[in-house]
Image (tube, rainbow, N blue to C red):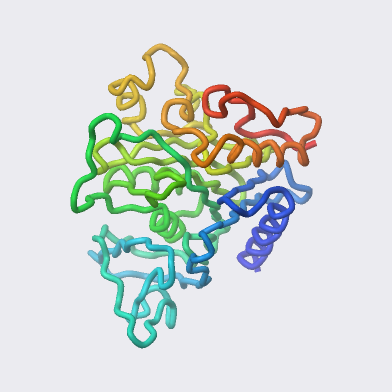
Amino acid sequence: IFFRARMICSVWGLVLLALLVPAEGCTVLLAAKGATTDGSLLTSHSNDGDGITDGRLFRVPAMTHPPNSRRPVYPSPETYPRLVLSDGSRGTGNYAPTPGQSDTRPLGDIPQVNATHALFEATYGIMNEHGLSAGESTCSSVSWETFGYAKPKPPKALMSIDELTRIAMERCTTAREAVQLMGDLAVKYGFYGPDSFEGVAESLALVDTQEAFVFHVLNDPTHTSAIWAAQRVPDDHVVVIANMFIIREINVSDSANFLYSDNMFSIAKQHKLWAEGTPFDFTRVYSDGEYAHKYYSGRRMWGAARLLAPSLGLRPEYGNLKTDAPYHFSFRPD
């Protein structure tokens, strides 16, 4: 019953989001428990997908796995069919081939755990049986090619945001656990993004029954690891992610509210993106700003705040969304 109720809440979030912003972008709206009338935590995701996303929804059952099992990691085309499996390994009938389709070949594999949770998944892991839920928004990030790096051929990174969210739903019960697991996997096995005009980095809004986090991840300069950061959302706040990073100054002494990869500072310092001794603004350091045009992200952020917290008096115009930081990471609705 709880699993079903959480699903209904997420659907409600999608309806609310449709009232707030246009759907021509992957926009995420998150509400922490003190920002809802009944104490629910909500996250949502409008998936633009250019109209060609494989939108099938599957329930993957809870499973147990033999000792020394391996968990295949699959590519993430997102178009139909995003995955083809004839062995029922993600649930009987899920991803079954139709005539002419062949099983998807894994990119690689990682050690499997003894037991995995039931979950709903589409392009991404959506929600598991413990109420852990996620919404996704692709973001721009610094281009390492401008620093002279080349992408390995063939690619060496194993983890997409699609597979990271599925693995997190399979193995975690809380948003904090999911953040740490996805970050560790991305660093160890390498992260790759969609490599589209939208950017190659990713953001997630994660909620469980008590806490909410925003998670940002991008590939490292070698394209074999990752850089990531996460920030806890205050209990009475809401968050809007509109295809751009939103985490600003990282408080290194506050591990309850900030988590990040060990290489976050050193890579920024090495490439002169940040000067040691100055505040570390994750978005200013690692974002490439609004990628489509000015106001592409900011106008959606402002639009949500205008409806949910008009008392803030935020202005729709600004200079540079990345460097000027005109809008808050999160805010309290009126």
